[in-house]
Amino acid sequence: MDAVIRKQLKIAACKARIGIIEGVYNAKSGHPGGSLSCVDIITYLYFNHMNVDPIDPKNEDRDRFVLSKGHAAPALYAVLALKGYFPHEWIKTLRKSDSNLQGHPSIKYTPGVDMCTGSLGQGISAACGMALGAKLAGKNFRIYTILGDGEIQEGQVWEAAMYASAKDLDNLVAVVDNNNLQIDGTVAEVNSPYPIVEKFKAFGWNVIEIDAHSFDEIDAAFNSAREFKGKPTCIVAKSIKGKGVSYMENMVNWHGVAPNQEQYEQAMSELSAALAELEA
Amino acid sequence: MADIIKTATRDAYGKALVELGAVNDKVVVLDADLAAATKTGMFKKAYPDRFIDSGICESNMMGVAAGLATTGYTVFASTFAMFAAGRAFEQVRNSIGYPHLNVKIGATHAGISVGEDGASHQCCEDIGLMRTIPGMTIINPADAVEARAAVLAAAEYEGPVYMRFGRLAVPCVFDESYKFEWGKAVVLKEGKDVTICATGLMVNEAIEAGKLLAQEGIDAEIINVHTIKPLDAQTILASAAKTGCIVTAEEHNIIGGLGSAVCEASCESGAPVPVVRVGVNDIFGKSGPAVELLHIYGLDAANIAAKAKTALSLKK
Image 1 (spheres, each protein chain N blue to C red):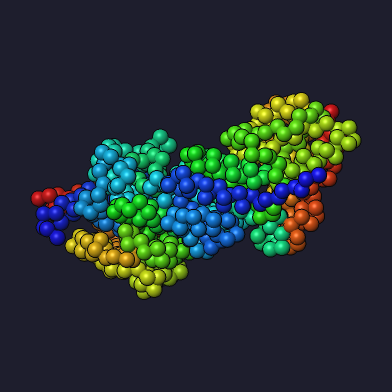
Image 2 (cartoon, each protein chain N blue to C red; image 1 turned 90 degrees about the vertical axis):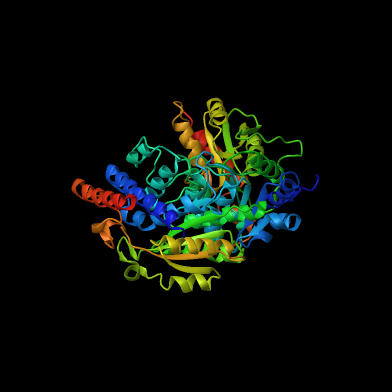
C-alpha cells in the first residue's frame, strides 16, 4: 500500500477511535471493546475501498456495508461522521432518546446505514440478500459485512454461509472480527467457534487470514477478494479487542461498559497522543 | 344445486404469483424447499430466474428477503406458517419489520386444516405473533378469489405483509366480480341480532351459521375480516353498535388472533359489547383428516351458531 494512503488511513482510524470513546463515554453505555477491534477495517472500507458517496447515501449502485455485529455501532458511526454522512456533533448524542444514533445500527435513523442490525446472526443474511439483488439486477456493486467471532456461534450465520456459497455470491465479503473475546469469556471458553478458517473453507468460501490492524494486509485481502470469482470471501481478521486504548486491550470486561471520567480522559489522552504522532 | 367449487388459497397464491410475474419484473419469490406445497413452484416454472430456493433455512431466507428488498425488489418469501411466523419470528421482527421492508410473507399451511401432519405443523399462533410487530399488515383471505386479489394488492403496497393461506380446498365465497379493498372489512350479510366476524376459511362457515341462525329467527350480520391488522374497527364497531354482541370465528388460537383484536377494539370503544370467540381453544392440534379436525375443534358453522346464541344471551 502507498505510504501516504496508509498514513491517511491510520489518521482516520485514530480519529474514529476518538469518536468511539466520545460516543460511548457520553452515552454512559455501549460497546467500546468490539468497536475498537474492527474500526480499522471499517475505516479502510469507507475511505479506501467501497464505492460510496455521503452526498448520495441511497444511490442504488453503491456498495453496501452491513455491520452484522451491530453492537460495534460506535465504530460505524465514528467512520460515517468522518466520511461526512452526518455532523460529528451527532457522536455525542449516541443512545440518547432524541438521537439519530441508535444503540444498534438502524436505517430508519441514520444516513449511511444500509441495514438494521444488532440481533446477532441476522446481518449476514441480509448481506446475502443484497448480494443476490446485485446478481439479479446484473449490477456490479459489492456487499461487505463484519461478523463477531462470538456472533458466529449463531446458527443463522451457518445457514447464510451455506447459502452464499451455494448461490455463488462472489460479490459478498464477510469479515470475522476475531478478537477472541465475548461477554462471558474467551470464545474458546464459552463455546469455541474454532477452527474458523477451516469451517468457512468447508462451507465453500474463499478464506483469507489477516492482521485486523495492518492496513497493508487489509488492503491486500479486500483487493484479492474483489478479484476472486465464483465464491464469497471470508476474511478472518485477528484483532485486539479494545485496540488503541491501553487498559481496554484484550480485556473481556470492556465488552459492554463505558469508561468513567478518569478512564475517558486517559483514553482521550492516549489517542490524542497517537494522533499527534501520526500527524507530525 | 350446482357443485360447489373448492380451491385451496395456497393454489390461488401460486397462480397469483405467476400473474404478477408477467406484469412486474421486480417480483422475486423465495421458498424454503416447499415450493411444491406452498405452490410457489408455479412461479418457479414460469420465471425460474426470479425464483430462489433458500433450502431448509427459514431464518436465513427471511434475512435474504430483507436484504433483497433493500435493493429494490418486491420479495415474496414463502414457507409454512409454522416456520414463517414461528421459527423465523425474530428475523421477521428485526430484519423485515423494524426496517419496514417491502417483503411479503406467503405463509401457507396455517391452522388445524393442515390435517394429517399434526400439531407440529398446525400453526395456530401466527396471527398473534405477527400482530405484535409494529407496521405489519396481516391478511387472511377467505377463499381463492380473495387470496388472488390480496396477493395482487400486496404487491402494490410498500411495506411488510403477512399473508395466511390454507392447505385445504375450501368453497369459494366470492365470484370474480369481487373487489378487494385494502384494509376494509366486508359486510357479507346485514343483520340486527348478532355480529359474526370471521376470517379465512371460517368466513364460509360463518355464512352457513347465518343460515342456521335464520332458521331459528336470529338475524346475524356477517363480516369478512380479511385484514386482521390494521383492523377495520370502524366497520366492526358500527355493526356491534347495531347488534349489541359479537362472535369471532378464526382457525387460530382464541388467544392473540382476530378474537383478541376484536375484544380490544370493543373494550376500548367506550361502548363495549359481549364478544364470544370461536377458535382453537388454546390447545395443540392433532393428526386427522382436515375437515374432521375442523369439526373436532369446533371450527364449523354449528359451533359459530351455538356461540352466537351464547353471545345473544350475554346481551343486556
